[in-house]
Image (cartoon, rainbow, N blue to C red; front, side, top):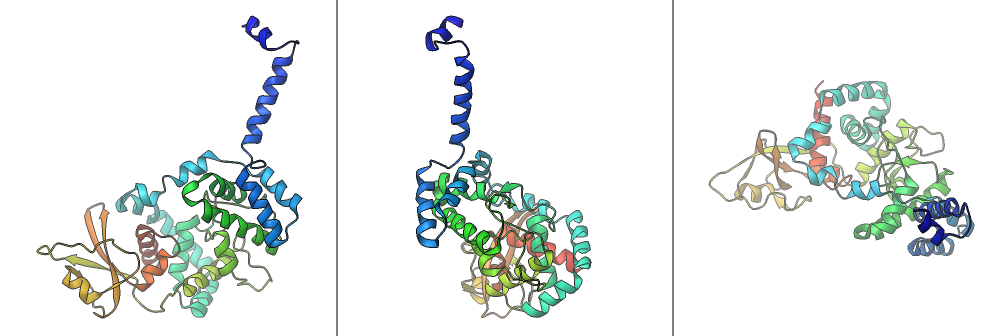
Length: 332
């Protein structure tokens, strides 16, 4: 071993120096200081938004590639679990009890949000409950690292996450946040309601009147912002979210899970074999769902408000979890 070492190095101690250099290169490789896409991003932020070049360069130097983020986005629960398994994560007695405490603590704020935006208090609470366990788990990744990793090293959605990184820098400038300190999910979502940067900029509101729309630390702003998001995406006050259905066994059902957006009338779905368990206007649009629950297949009809919940997360299992948790919160 000594002979080999001496063959490569001419002076004593160079091996230690070499190890230090290798470590330095490896550490540097985990940052985005010299990444071609990051360099292009710096130019865009300077030319399009007037950022100081040195500031954005420093952020790219600070941003770290996280393999755990790439691993996480490749196996989201919505795509790897059955509905029965997914439900057991979010619709639990423990989460319900915690939600009741949250609703009691912020009863006046939730009532005001329901009055101002037409979104039920239990739906708002359920969103926050599913997303962050009522603020107890807002994410441990630096938003900068998450968005840089996905924007520059996750090819399937690099365009989307690069745009979110752009929105993030605009957000921190507007809100006077520290870009290197904010933490969130592996996808760069932040705060009680887990808004991605573009949603934060467009839908977060100052609901307590202190002049700052802070959904990261302020649950009052978070409650108002979730309600504003739902109203902005078409929530219909007082309307049904979803109902169970029975399937006519004599007909081949081919319409299940073909669209999140309601596009067939209840009457059409009935003809296709889906019979709503509750009285619904036959002209109303709905989407048919078949979910693999713990006790076998479950059949549901999702209406406009169910679709609105999927605008928060494009998953019927997610929307169903929010709905069922909200029902548990409502009936206690």
